[in-house]
Length: 197
Image (cartoon, rainbow, N blue to C red; front, side):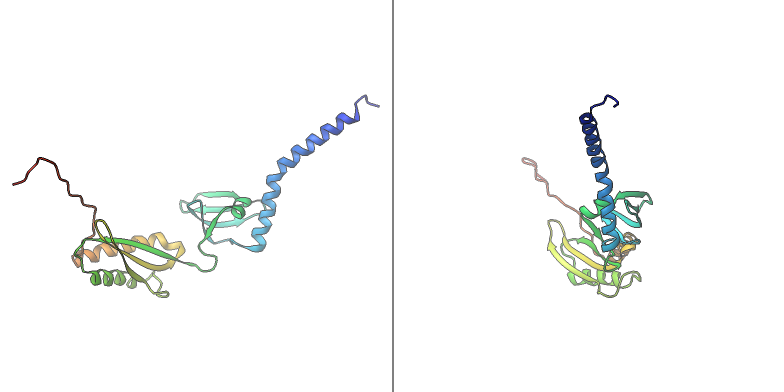
């Protein structure tokens, strides 16, 4: 009656439907992912997570997106599909504690037992280090320029950076008191044709 062919209207409506379908695909994906997050709870409000190397705290889980706050106090809105399909490390899902590793290299000739006792004492005297599991000091390796040790402690996941700093300071202080030298790379350079003496 209007002089418009029905076949052309059908084609236009089909194209419009396809366009809307593609446009809504991301929204539907995020909506379904939001339901997965709310029911399965792989992350919860208050959890500390690591996403693409960035640490953040979950602040709000919505139907379409999740609000997280990183350690610089910047709020980030992450589509729910990213949390479901990408790898996310949840440091506080089963336990609020996280293991902290402190690597230390000391000069060759240092007394191994003294180094290990000093590292353990630093951990045991820090009130924010968990007593269970017990702190451990390990002699790992004969390095290129150092004897390599590692101090392993369990701490509150939200306080890892502060406790790491405290332990570094205490280790440096006690090593100085006990004349334990923290190693640094050393190289012997031999120049052909140059003699000493």
